[in-house]
Length: 244
Image 1 (cartoon, rainbow, N blue to C red):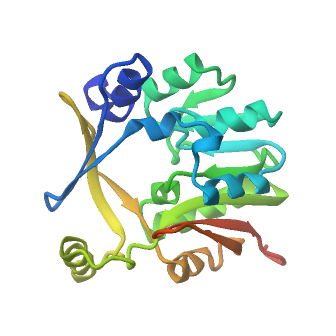
Image 2: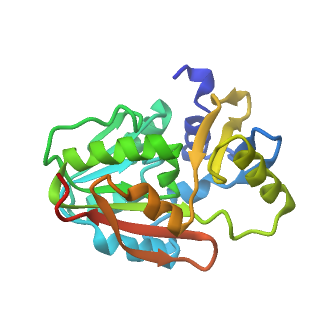
């Protein structure tokens, strides 16, 4: 990643250093949304209840994919877990190190390749199921995750049911996706912060039924869902029995 493309990390760097910070997400159809990077630095006591409950399922050695500013990893590290945190943003990883994370690396989800039995828990919080990008890639990576995790491993993945909306802009975009053979929630976007702009990338948000369909034949199945008070939810995913 070129420095001028690390908009994601730049917003964290600004926030960490006490400067005004914000997160601008630009969808390919021109729709703009703005977020607050403070969320990425929040403490456990300030998390939504469904996120707090998800932490109860964490066990053993942990791989935190898309760790951001490290809030989940830091919490687990303090609880004594062995956590490896990865993110594609070099500046995000720098911020994680400055905040005290002991094991963190610059690495994309595609580069996450480890030997068998490396992890007991794969963490994909903060809607990071979206990093799977599309149906085909999700299934390919899930099969890889099966091989590199322990026998009773779990995946804790956050996403959003994009069908729970009445926004004309979102509904129009869902239809646009379906017309070109994409999943309704396969969003193409980029991040912007000041003069920094990321490359365009795909981000996948799915309903519970779509998530179950993606898991079929990958060696994983849903154990349970943890709902929020909005369209966000977390899926606790476990290894299926009798998978080759």
